[in-house]
Amino acid sequence: MAPPRATSRQQPSRLSDDAEIAAYKRAVARAAAELLEDGMRVGLGTGSTVAHLLPAIAERGLTGLCCVATSPATERAARALELPIGELDEVGELDVAIDGADQIDPRGWLVKGGGGAHTREKIVAVSARRFVVIASAEKAVERLAAPVPLELVRFGVQRTLHSLAPAQLRGVPRTPDGGVIADYLGPIDDPAELATRLSAATGVVEHGLFAPEMVSVILIAGALGVEHRAGAKPEG
Ligand code: 5RP
Image (tube, rainbow, N blue to C red):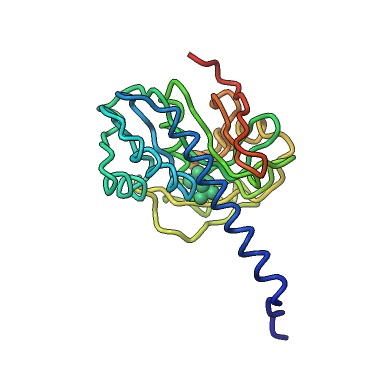
């Protein structure tokens, strides 16, 4: 049987949801860009929310910024806007890193890696004195749910997947660091327990669970404006 066609009532409401989400992403990106000051060393995340952040930073016309990108896509976009880009190992500790998220639970646990960049994103997040998460309201969930992105070593990947079952390869090109992207598809009853189990699994480079202790502040844009939620990482 042919799949049901979108009716004229469904189509506009889906379009308006997409437009609303894009507007929230723009709003939260602008709010985050306001946190930056001249001379800061800034980690730039990856994804469609960060794609709104980059022009918002460029528009501020700050001087002496030095940015570190978490993906080739972010690096290209940042360079096109003439944001200065450096290598993390040359720049050293960052003042702030700003990045999106796929899911945010009420305790501040995140799932990241929808774009497969979570390994670099986590390295940049923990290299920053302040890690700011930016998201549109639909990313706030009551409970985290699969998929949890994984970066795996290519060698023996089927054995690694077997040890993590249920998990499957995503079928995307290798990461810039030579890993392959997969998703853990099982339940997330306890994010801390799952994060420990995934970190301990041989062949896992990094998983997409980010603990509340990594996060300084979460900005969430919705119909009521931009909400600031304190994270569990001490400020300073
Ligand atoms: C990429 C990520 C992104 O931050 C996450 O997928 C959110 O993306 P978007 O801003 O497009 O919704 O973790 O690896």
